[in-house]
Length: 156
View 1 (cartoon, rainbow, N blue to C red):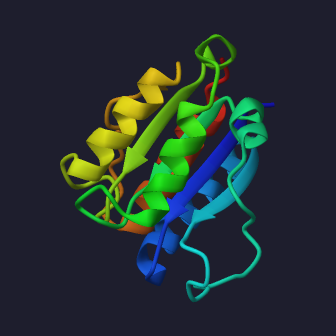
View 2: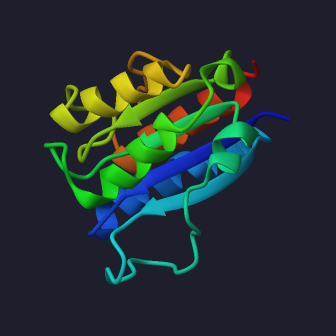
């Protein structure tokens, strides 16, 4: 079974819904998933509560990491938490793991500044960023499910 970690930054439900759709797609492909929301302490919960806090153990467990970023720009407190965890990883332990990022528009948009910075940090941590994942679905939610299915099927 493949393990997919879905980490997302969300102050609105749109990014959360896209992240959840990727997680649903991974489950549909029989992958195990973990969901983690990046948020500043005291931030209002969106959608469901209890996603948990991102920890090194989550990244060690995952074969694939999907990172959803709401902002176009890097430098938010939420991203600092992710970047700090990535800096603390041993790249040797991360060898063979891969990651895919998406921005506020899901799969349809080009890479944002935040995505580029996160992908550089993933690479420095020994996790290989993947290029765009294709989907023919017209609906953003369905495209994200397709991505989750594709990434959940592919085992290292």
